[in-house]
Length: 327
Image 1: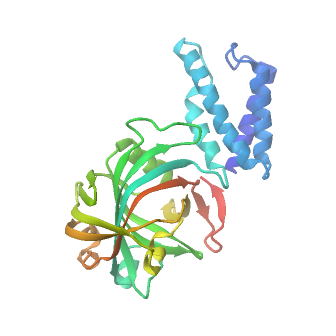
Image 2: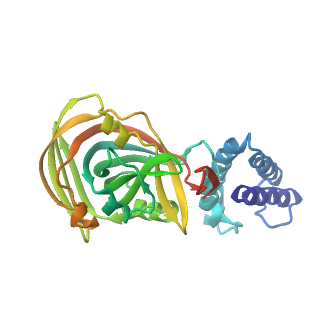
Image 3: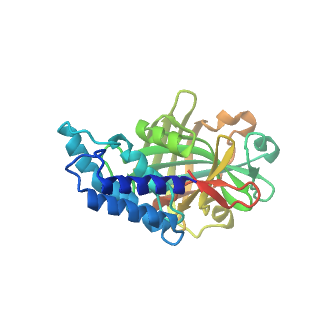
Protein backbone atom coordinates (compact mmCIF):
# COMPACT_ATOMS: atom_id res chain seq x y z
CA UNK A 1 0.00 0.00 0.00
CA UNK A 2 2.82 2.42 0.87
CA UNK A 3 4.42 1.74 -2.51
CA UNK A 4 1.15 2.42 -4.36
CA UNK A 5 0.54 5.66 -2.47
CA UNK A 6 4.01 7.02 -3.22
CA UNK A 7 3.65 5.98 -6.86
CA UNK A 8 0.37 7.89 -7.14
CA UNK A 9 1.83 10.97 -5.47
CA UNK A 10 4.76 11.01 -7.90
CA UNK A 11 2.58 10.30 -10.90
CA UNK A 12 0.12 13.12 -10.20
CA UNK A 13 2.99 15.46 -9.28
CA UNK A 14 4.48 14.73 -12.69
CA UNK A 15 1.16 15.39 -14.42
CA UNK A 16 0.75 18.70 -12.58
CA UNK A 17 4.27 19.74 -13.58
CA UNK A 18 3.53 18.95 -17.22
CA UNK A 19 0.24 20.86 -17.15
CA UNK A 20 1.98 23.81 -15.47
CA UNK A 21 -1.01 24.84 -13.36
CA UNK A 22 0.95 27.33 -11.29
CA UNK A 23 1.23 25.11 -8.22
CA UNK A 24 5.04 25.04 -8.47
CA UNK A 25 7.65 27.72 -8.76
CA UNK A 26 8.10 29.09 -12.27
CA UNK A 27 11.88 28.64 -12.19
CA UNK A 28 11.60 24.87 -11.95
CA UNK A 29 11.78 23.14 -15.38
CA UNK A 30 8.32 21.58 -15.57
CA UNK A 31 8.91 19.23 -18.46
CA UNK A 32 12.02 17.63 -16.98
CA UNK A 33 10.71 17.23 -13.44
CA UNK A 34 7.34 16.06 -14.67
CA UNK A 35 8.82 13.34 -16.87
CA UNK A 36 11.19 12.17 -14.12
CA UNK A 37 8.37 11.98 -11.57
CA UNK A 38 6.21 9.92 -13.94
CA UNK A 39 9.03 7.53 -14.93
CA UNK A 40 9.95 6.93 -11.29
CA UNK A 41 6.31 6.41 -10.35
CA UNK A 42 5.88 3.77 -13.05
CA UNK A 43 9.14 2.08 -12.07
CA UNK A 44 8.01 1.85 -8.46
CA UNK A 45 4.89 -0.02 -9.60
CA UNK A 46 7.04 -2.75 -11.17
CA UNK A 47 8.38 -5.47 -8.86
CA UNK A 48 11.34 -5.89 -11.20
CA UNK A 49 12.37 -2.25 -10.90
CA UNK A 50 11.01 -1.50 -7.42
CA UNK A 51 14.36 -1.42 -5.60
CA UNK A 52 16.10 0.58 -8.32
CA UNK A 53 13.22 3.05 -8.53
CA UNK A 54 13.10 3.45 -4.74
CA UNK A 55 16.79 4.36 -4.61
CA UNK A 56 16.49 6.69 -7.61
CA UNK A 57 13.56 8.45 -5.96
CA UNK A 58 15.66 9.00 -2.84
CA UNK A 59 18.51 10.32 -5.02
CA UNK A 60 16.09 12.54 -6.97
CA UNK A 61 14.81 14.02 -3.70
CA UNK A 62 18.38 14.80 -2.65
CA UNK A 63 19.06 16.44 -6.01
CA UNK A 64 16.00 18.67 -5.62
CA UNK A 65 16.74 19.62 -2.01
CA UNK A 66 19.46 22.28 -2.60
CA UNK A 67 17.32 23.86 -5.34
CA UNK A 68 14.33 24.05 -3.05
CA UNK A 69 16.45 25.40 -0.20
CA UNK A 70 17.83 28.11 -2.51
CA UNK A 71 14.36 29.16 -3.61
CA UNK A 72 13.08 29.10 -0.06
CA UNK A 73 16.03 31.21 1.08
CA UNK A 74 15.03 33.81 -1.50
CA UNK A 75 11.44 33.81 -0.23
CA UNK A 76 10.04 32.01 -3.22
CA UNK A 77 7.17 29.73 -2.24
CA UNK A 78 7.86 26.06 -2.86
CA UNK A 79 5.11 23.47 -2.51
CA UNK A 80 6.00 20.64 -0.15
CA UNK A 81 9.60 21.55 0.77
CA UNK A 82 9.11 20.30 4.31
CA UNK A 83 8.13 16.88 2.96
CA UNK A 84 11.44 16.19 1.20
CA UNK A 85 13.11 14.33 4.12
CA UNK A 86 9.96 12.24 4.57
CA UNK A 87 9.92 11.31 0.86
CA UNK A 88 13.63 10.38 1.02
CA UNK A 89 13.19 7.89 3.87
CA UNK A 90 9.83 6.73 2.56
CA UNK A 91 11.38 5.79 -0.77
CA UNK A 92 14.29 3.96 0.86
CA UNK A 93 11.92 2.01 3.11
CA UNK A 94 10.25 0.51 0.02
CA UNK A 95 13.35 -1.46 -0.96
CA UNK A 96 13.24 -5.23 -0.64
CA UNK A 97 16.99 -5.86 -0.85
CA UNK A 98 18.74 -2.51 -0.61
CA UNK A 99 20.07 -0.92 2.58
CA UNK A 100 18.81 2.13 4.43
CA UNK A 101 21.64 2.83 6.87
CA UNK A 102 25.36 2.01 7.04
CA UNK A 103 27.49 1.93 10.19
CA UNK A 104 30.88 0.78 11.41
CA UNK A 105 30.96 -0.99 14.79
CA UNK A 106 34.28 -0.55 16.58
CA UNK A 107 35.72 -2.16 19.72
CA UNK A 108 32.78 -4.51 20.19
CA UNK A 109 32.88 -6.54 23.40
CA UNK A 110 30.45 -9.37 24.23
CA UNK A 111 29.68 -10.58 27.75
CA UNK A 112 27.33 -13.58 27.61
CA UNK A 113 25.69 -15.40 30.52
CA UNK A 114 23.02 -18.07 31.00
CA UNK A 115 19.72 -17.63 32.84
CA UNK A 116 16.60 -19.63 33.62
CA UNK A 117 14.42 -19.57 30.47
CA UNK A 118 11.18 -19.77 32.46
CA UNK A 119 11.99 -16.54 34.29
CA UNK A 120 13.23 -14.73 31.17
CA UNK A 121 10.39 -15.81 28.88
CA UNK A 122 7.89 -13.78 30.92
CA UNK A 123 9.80 -10.63 29.94
CA UNK A 124 10.12 -11.38 26.20
CA UNK A 125 7.26 -11.05 23.67
CA UNK A 126 8.80 -13.69 21.38
CA UNK A 127 9.77 -17.34 21.74
CA UNK A 128 13.22 -17.66 23.29
CA UNK A 129 15.93 -19.40 21.30
CA UNK A 130 17.73 -21.60 23.82
CA UNK A 131 21.30 -22.90 23.92
CA UNK A 132 21.54 -26.36 25.47
CA UNK A 133 18.30 -25.70 27.32
CA UNK A 134 19.42 -22.36 28.75
CA UNK A 135 18.38 -18.84 27.85
CA UNK A 136 21.26 -16.46 27.16
CA UNK A 137 21.56 -12.76 27.95
CA UNK A 138 24.36 -10.63 26.53
CA UNK A 139 25.82 -7.29 27.52
CA UNK A 140 27.40 -5.68 24.46
CA UNK A 141 29.44 -2.48 24.40
CA UNK A 142 30.87 -0.78 21.31
CA UNK A 143 31.41 2.47 19.43
CA UNK A 144 29.14 3.09 16.45
CA UNK A 145 30.95 5.20 13.85
CA UNK A 146 30.51 6.54 10.31
CA UNK A 147 26.71 6.42 10.44
CA UNK A 148 25.30 7.42 7.09
CA UNK A 149 22.35 7.00 4.74
CA UNK A 150 22.40 6.16 0.99
CA UNK A 151 24.00 8.85 -1.22
CA UNK A 152 24.92 10.90 1.86
CA UNK A 153 28.24 11.24 3.72
CA UNK A 154 28.66 10.89 7.45
CA UNK A 155 27.87 14.12 9.28
CA UNK A 156 30.51 15.22 11.82
CA UNK A 157 29.06 15.34 15.30
CA UNK A 158 26.07 13.19 14.31
CA UNK A 159 27.73 10.03 13.03
CA UNK A 160 29.45 8.59 16.09
CA UNK A 161 28.19 7.32 19.44
CA UNK A 162 28.97 4.88 22.21
CA UNK A 163 26.43 2.14 22.88
CA UNK A 164 25.74 -0.39 25.61
CA UNK A 165 22.93 -2.88 25.14
CA UNK A 166 21.31 -5.80 26.91
CA UNK A 167 19.91 -8.43 24.58
CA UNK A 168 18.66 -11.98 24.35
CA UNK A 169 18.05 -14.47 21.53
CA UNK A 170 14.69 -15.33 20.00
CA UNK A 171 13.06 -17.17 17.13
CA UNK A 172 10.08 -15.79 15.25
CA UNK A 173 8.38 -17.98 12.64
CA UNK A 174 11.54 -20.03 12.23
CA UNK A 175 13.82 -16.97 11.87
CA UNK A 176 16.51 -16.57 14.53
CA UNK A 177 17.35 -13.09 15.73
CA UNK A 178 18.06 -10.74 18.60
CA UNK A 179 15.68 -9.00 20.99
CA UNK A 180 16.85 -5.90 22.88
CA UNK A 181 15.70 -4.98 26.37
CA UNK A 182 17.58 -1.70 26.23
CA UNK A 183 20.07 0.10 24.04
CA UNK A 184 21.83 2.88 25.92
CA UNK A 185 23.63 5.53 23.85
CA UNK A 186 25.18 8.96 24.32
CA UNK A 187 23.90 10.84 21.24
CA UNK A 188 20.42 12.36 21.54
CA UNK A 189 19.62 12.75 17.77
CA UNK A 190 20.47 9.09 17.13
CA UNK A 191 18.33 8.00 20.07
CA UNK A 192 15.38 10.01 18.75
CA UNK A 193 15.69 8.57 15.22
CA UNK A 194 16.01 4.99 16.50
CA UNK A 195 12.97 5.28 18.74
CA UNK A 196 10.81 7.08 16.18
CA UNK A 197 11.61 5.21 12.96
CA UNK A 198 12.81 1.80 14.20
CA UNK A 199 10.82 1.37 17.44
CA UNK A 200 13.96 0.35 19.32
CA UNK A 201 14.25 0.94 23.10
CA UNK A 202 17.13 3.43 23.05
CA UNK A 203 17.85 5.46 26.19
CA UNK A 204 20.26 8.23 27.02
CA UNK A 205 23.33 7.36 29.09
CA UNK A 206 26.78 8.71 29.72
CA UNK A 207 29.13 6.12 28.22
CA UNK A 208 32.91 5.97 28.03
CA UNK A 209 34.69 3.26 26.03
CA UNK A 210 38.47 3.28 25.95
CA UNK A 211 40.91 0.89 24.34
CA UNK A 212 44.62 1.25 24.97
CA UNK A 213 46.62 -1.45 23.20
CA UNK A 214 45.22 -4.64 24.77
CA UNK A 215 43.36 -2.97 27.62
CA UNK A 216 39.61 -2.34 27.31
CA UNK A 217 37.60 -0.17 29.68
CA UNK A 218 33.88 0.64 29.66
CA UNK A 219 31.88 2.80 32.03
CA UNK A 220 28.19 3.69 31.67
CA UNK A 221 25.80 5.68 33.83
CA UNK A 222 22.12 6.30 33.09
CA UNK A 223 19.28 7.53 35.25
CA UNK A 224 18.60 4.02 36.58
CA UNK A 225 21.56 1.76 35.72
CA UNK A 226 25.34 1.70 35.77
CA UNK A 227 28.10 -0.58 34.54
CA UNK A 228 31.84 -0.49 34.87
CA UNK A 229 34.28 -3.13 33.71
CA UNK A 230 37.78 -3.66 32.42
CA UNK A 231 39.19 -6.47 30.29
CA UNK A 232 42.36 -7.62 28.60
CA UNK A 233 42.16 -8.41 24.90
CA UNK A 234 43.98 -11.57 23.95
CA UNK A 235 44.66 -13.62 20.84
CA UNK A 236 42.42 -14.05 17.80
CA UNK A 237 40.66 -17.39 17.91
CA UNK A 238 38.33 -19.55 15.92
CA UNK A 239 34.77 -18.96 17.04
CA UNK A 240 33.30 -21.73 19.18
CA UNK A 241 29.91 -23.31 18.52
CA UNK A 242 28.41 -21.11 21.23
CA UNK A 243 29.91 -17.90 19.80
CA UNK A 244 28.61 -18.72 16.33
CA UNK A 245 25.18 -19.35 17.85
CA UNK A 246 25.19 -16.03 19.75
CA UNK A 247 26.83 -13.65 17.28
CA UNK A 248 26.03 -14.85 13.77
CA UNK A 249 22.51 -13.46 13.80
CA UNK A 250 21.52 -11.26 10.91
CA UNK A 251 18.32 -9.74 12.19
CA UNK A 252 16.54 -8.21 15.14
CA UNK A 253 12.93 -8.19 16.26
CA UNK A 254 10.88 -5.50 17.92
CA UNK A 255 7.21 -4.51 18.16
CA UNK A 256 5.14 -1.52 17.11
CA UNK A 257 1.39 -1.11 17.62
CA UNK A 258 0.93 -4.84 18.14
CA UNK A 259 2.91 -5.80 15.02
CA UNK A 260 6.18 -7.71 14.93
CA UNK A 261 8.93 -5.92 13.01
CA UNK A 262 11.98 -7.65 11.57
CA UNK A 263 15.13 -5.70 10.79
CA UNK A 264 17.75 -7.43 8.63
CA UNK A 265 21.40 -6.68 9.32
CA UNK A 266 24.10 -7.32 6.69
CA UNK A 267 27.74 -7.91 7.59
CA UNK A 268 30.57 -10.40 7.16
CA UNK A 269 31.05 -13.09 9.85
CA UNK A 270 32.51 -11.90 13.13
CA UNK A 271 36.25 -12.19 13.71
CA UNK A 272 36.55 -12.54 17.48
CA UNK A 273 39.43 -12.32 19.91
CA UNK A 274 39.50 -13.89 23.33
CA UNK A 275 39.34 -11.60 26.35
CA UNK A 276 40.02 -11.91 30.06
CA UNK A 277 37.50 -10.03 32.16
CA UNK A 278 39.50 -8.32 34.91
CA UNK A 279 36.89 -6.41 36.92
CA UNK A 280 33.19 -5.66 36.71
CA UNK A 281 30.69 -3.60 38.71
CA UNK A 282 27.30 -4.53 37.27
CA UNK A 283 24.16 -2.57 38.02
CA UNK A 284 23.08 -2.88 34.40
CA UNK A 285 21.80 -6.45 34.06
CA UNK A 286 19.92 -5.96 37.35
CA UNK A 287 17.26 -3.95 35.49
CA UNK A 288 15.64 -7.29 34.62
CA UNK A 289 15.57 -8.37 38.27
CA UNK A 290 17.97 -10.10 40.63
CA UNK A 291 17.03 -13.53 39.25
CA UNK A 292 18.39 -12.48 35.83
CA UNK A 293 21.52 -10.69 37.00
CA UNK A 294 24.84 -11.66 35.43
CA UNK A 295 26.95 -14.00 37.56
CA UNK A 296 29.29 -16.13 35.45
CA UNK A 297 30.14 -15.07 31.91
CA UNK A 298 30.48 -17.52 29.02
CA UNK A 299 33.25 -17.12 26.45
CA UNK A 300 33.44 -13.30 26.32
CA UNK A 301 34.79 -12.00 23.02
CA UNK A 302 36.07 -8.87 21.29
CA UNK A 303 35.96 -7.61 17.69
CA UNK A 304 38.02 -4.65 16.53
CA UNK A 305 35.77 -3.51 13.67
CA UNK A 306 32.76 -4.60 11.63
CA UNK A 307 31.04 -2.89 8.69
CA UNK A 308 27.27 -3.11 8.98
CA UNK A 309 24.30 -2.23 6.80
CA UNK A 310 20.65 -2.21 7.83
CA UNK A 311 17.84 -3.06 5.48
CA UNK A 312 14.36 -1.57 6.00
CA UNK A 313 12.31 -3.04 8.83
CA UNK A 314 9.30 -5.14 7.80
CA UNK A 315 6.09 -6.24 9.41
CA UNK A 316 6.04 -9.99 9.88
CA UNK A 317 3.32 -12.46 9.03
CA UNK A 318 2.50 -14.18 12.32
CA UNK A 319 2.51 -17.62 10.70
CA UNK A 320 5.09 -17.54 7.92
CA UNK A 321 7.55 -14.82 8.89
CA UNK A 322 7.41 -13.37 5.41
CA UNK A 323 7.35 -9.56 5.03
CA UNK A 324 3.88 -8.20 4.46
CA UNK A 325 4.62 -4.51 3.99
CA UNK A 326 7.43 -2.12 4.65
CA UNK A 327 7.33 0.70 7.16
